Length: 215
Image (tube, rainbow, N blue to C red):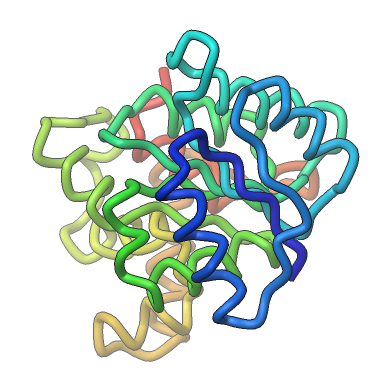
C-alpha cells in the first residue's frame, strides 16, 4: 500500500514509518501539521492515510479537519484517525458522510502491530475499523440510544463487532456462529434501527452511527 503518515511527534511518526515498511508498505509522504496533511492527501492520494487528530499549530483537531476536508474533495479517500483519548464526537464526525474507508484508533493500539495493520488494510480496501478499546469505553461511559434498546443481547454483540469493522464472516468466527446466522442478525438489527436498503448509503456505517449515538 501507498501510505501517508501525519503525526507531529517524531518518535511516533518514525516508529510508524518503520513498522509500515517492515510490513512491506511504502510511505509516500509524512506531515506534521494540519495544512501539510491536507496538501499531502490531495497531492499523493495515498491508498490510506494515518492521521493524528491533534496537530500544530493549535494542537486541537487540525488533523481531523484536514482529513475531513480531503474526503470532501476526494470522496471515500481512505483515512485512519489516531487519537490519544476516546472522543465520541471525533468518531461521529469521521463517519458522518456515510462513506466507507474510515477508521478511528487510539495511539496505544499501534503497539498491537498485527491488529493495527489488519485494521489499516480494511480501511484501505474501503471498509471501516473502530478500535475495540473505543467501543468498550463508549459503552462504559453510558453511550445509549433509544433505538438500541430494542436490540437483543446477540444483536448488540453483532453491532459492536460491526462497529470494529469486521465482516459477517469475521463476526461469525468471533461469536462461533455461521455466516448465515450473522446475516440474519444484521438484517434484523437494520430493521429495528430503521435502516433501509439504499444504494446511496452504507447500511453498516449508518448502524455504527446509531451505535455512536448520532442525534
